[in-house]
Image (cartoon, rainbow, N blue to C red; front, side, top):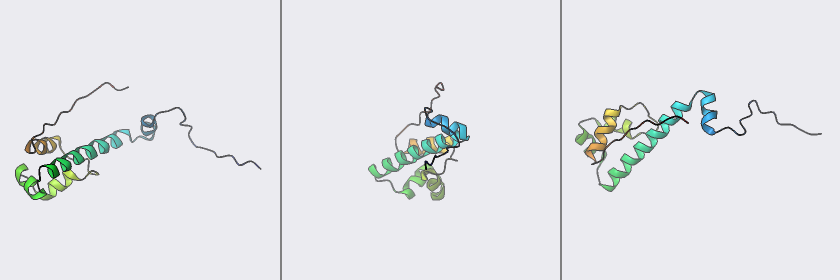
Length: 102
């Protein structure tokens, strides 16, 4: 007896981005991925420069809880202004650009 596996959607030959777009979650996944990279870069630079969270929050003129939200890789609801301010206080510059969709 032969058992056949039935797949609801055939995604063979499609890209992962196409799959995420079909599922309606491409933008959300991209936003989380970008936020994870930014949070990691900020955390790593803070470690290299020996900046504590308390000192970083003070330099940014914000609360420790706001900094924790900024450094939380899962929290994508952070304003660009906050990210730019964090970058500036560690001697970095936030650069953002748009490119043509494939």
